[in-house]
Amino acid sequence: MRISQIFGLFYQGNLIGAMIYGPLGMPNIWKKYAKAESKVIELKRLCCIDNTPKNTESYFIGKTLRWLKQNTDYDLVVSYADTFYGHSGVIYKASNFKHVGMTTKGKVIDYKGKFYHDKCIRTYYINKSGGKMLKPFAQRVKDALECGEARYIEMPEKNIYTYPLRKVSIGNK
Image (cartoon, rainbow, N blue to C red; front, side):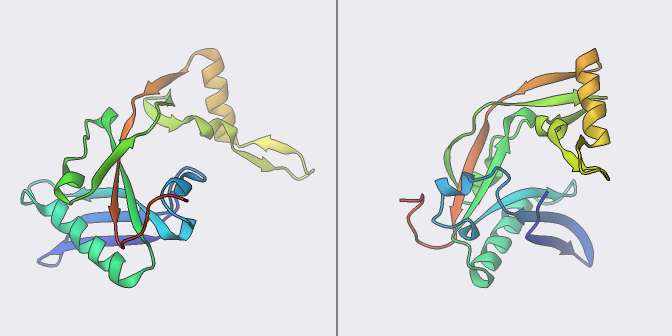
């Protein structure tokens, strides 16, 4: 995961939440939202400990959005609510993000009870003789798929949310 900004939320000196922002995960998807890749950032991860007050996540998001607006040149924040894990985007709605659509369905590989993006079986390195070789983990997962020890699982669409940090037109138009 590529990371640009990391934030911590503290209460009485204890870390109670963390948030990670970074470049959009899919190549060239930024073109849907901005005229330059450097103008859009993705809210990639958000977590708070259990038993925090009801609005803790939206409070935390609001603080980070204000910081990004004041301290960076980003125009837009994009985030995804993953329906596979039961997330519909309630926190984003509470934080005034706009629902702009859904992603396409995807697939992951279920291997030994963990989910891996299907691109994990297409990761290579250059060996000492200059040949292109699958990385060892990629080879293990690929072999497991071929012998039935791993399987593909279709993933549902994700909700896409955006939050403008500045007033600009969205898109590459």
